[in-house]
Length: 240
Image (tube, rainbow, N blue to C red; front, side, top):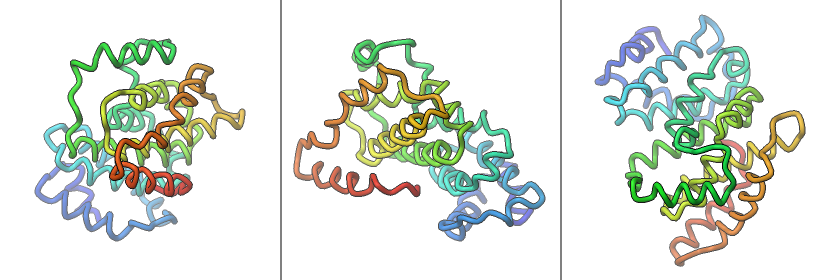
């Protein structure tokens, strides 16, 4: 990305951002080698510029596009390991609505379900645009948890799994794409922790995850069955 475009992103010049990000996202959609981004600190500067936009609620209409850019950047394992990104990971947890601020912890799975039932009247079904933002943020977190041990530890410390399990157990209906990336993030966090070198989900989380194992096989309608069958076929894919 040239210096002028980066400056416009840093300045949050809303009229230019869509075209700049659209060009970047198309050009680098399949990028896996980031050597050219390591000179002049370009990766980190772009990373901070994008998260500056994501931190601006007035630019919410650009957040899905920004998260697509973040998803591309999270493929760069070297930059994830060499830059301090804890604040940005927390932002992604918030955008994915899997931060634990709304949970009363520690709690058993049954207690989490009671919390969900008690708050259900206060919650609103996410709009389609909001669900897109949640799903895109989850994609980024999947990459981060897969690529970085530090990110895995941070997500576990911040009770990300508890928040996901609460959403999975919720009676509220969510788009299948969102449910898919919830399950994918659970899988990555659980399988990474199971190696023994990383913090692993606690007993109540493992038990609750087992209780939710019927999620993909409880198909309420042929249309939902088709949608979820596609998800099952995609679960084996690790690249997001």
